[in-house]
Image (cartoon, rainbow, N blue to C red; front, side, top):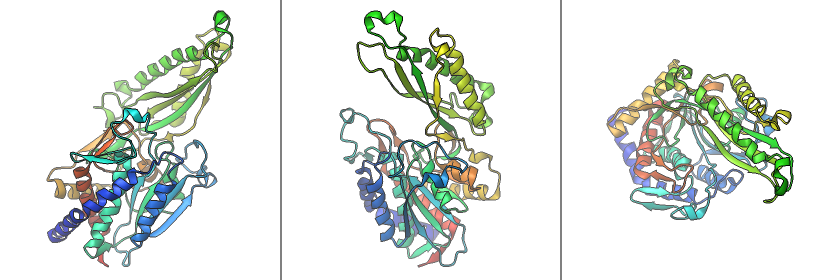
Length: 430
């Protein structure tokens, strides 16, 4: 791509940036937690239609995807699990096709009084936009769309098919991205602007969710010695899981991509509930666990280790040895993915193209990282032979209070994305 076209694309992003910021603000105002994404997805579908993209909006059918590699056990009802894809179909089709993927679902915001301002009342302060989902990852959705807008504003279009995906379920299963593959949306590369501060993710962990169900013997607290407290019984089991976590993080267990990461695999007890009455010894307890996995780690072996760890710990309890915990897998059953291990021509060319675009915008080399989180990249990289580049803006406090995204970083990512599309897909006149 010549320098004049680069300059035109950069200037087009700048010219549209106020509109992009307003668009992001509108997206953040939707409280699109899991199961509540429909209004936000309607808004995105209208944005696709307004731009002349062929718009596909559908409700995910679990029966269509449950037998596919990468499927995760479903959490909750899928009646409201809506995906939207906007397709640009090239006239000449002489370039390389591309998926621009992002997710609309956001995690719960927690107590609103712990935010400085309401989480769905987006505000801009000192160059940052605050609000739930501003960083993770509605800024990325806006970046994907406005990169294409900038190309169109120059009287140009990608010379290959481009599929702009707004999916759900990223935060709990990834089944939204899987449903896009099942529906036939494939390409020669994918770009996912998750908020990792303008770095390229070369490796990401897998994630496994599971619940541990314990049952105790209820009694009045006056006779607590004759009962068995199911909540207290959970504590040594949680301690045993943390011992397993330490074992998995031992230096000799780490693959090369994570050799210099201090603690790549994180176990989190994210939710616990139990009991029915303050003055009754609780008869039951359920706690929910998230555990990280290395790229290439055997999923079945990991499950067996988790189950053995819990059962061995339970056998140390006089009560639990006769009432072993029930382990239920629900939600993420996600393998890790290492783009850095893909030595194929497509992956190497895609990485090089993004490096060139990033350098043109920032004047610096593209940093490459291994992250301790997961994204939807695994579906494309592991199951569709499609290199998946995770490259997005700088954000802070994602999944926390006062989540925010750096708007100038979003601008740079949008410019780099426009240059990447122009080089990867080629350009044709409108």
